[in-house]
Length: 66
Image 1 (spheres, rainbow, N blue to C red):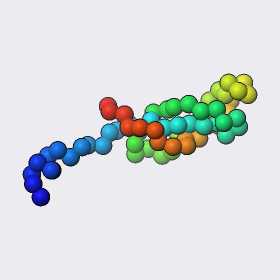
Image 2: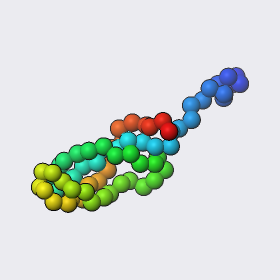
Image 3: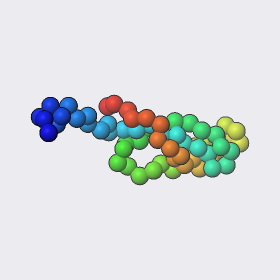
């Protein structure tokens, strides 16, 4: 292996953007979390039902450089 392959290896980003989806209505939004953290679950206002609802992380969208 050449030394250039070792030096040019990309570092993983610290944060990722994920898709959050409401468990009640299916409303979706994007959130940012640390790569090594657990999957997100949070309570947030859902505009479709006009109440707070549980949102769960569905999938990774992209990496965030920071």
